[in-house]
Length: 80
Image (spheres, helix red, strand yellow):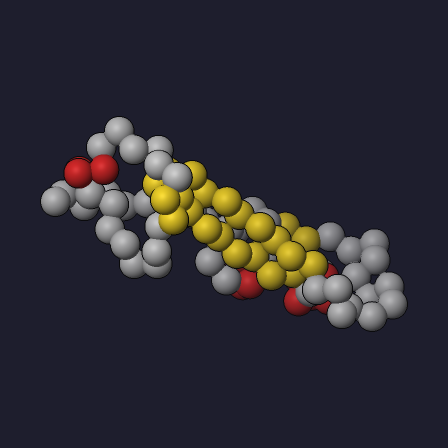
């Protein structure tokens, strides 16, 4: 996921940073880790955050809108 998934007013979109973290049965899932059939029954949690850049000056993004509709979370299971 990257900032190009945020659309809308350019000044507001530029001030927003998306991030994601995942846990599998409470354990952090590292980037690139495969979810396999060995994980059958495990619970995968996704936490998505969008942080507003507090260094944005004045009213730069006031009254603007942004869309998070293009943020995509995908999971592909592979067989162990």
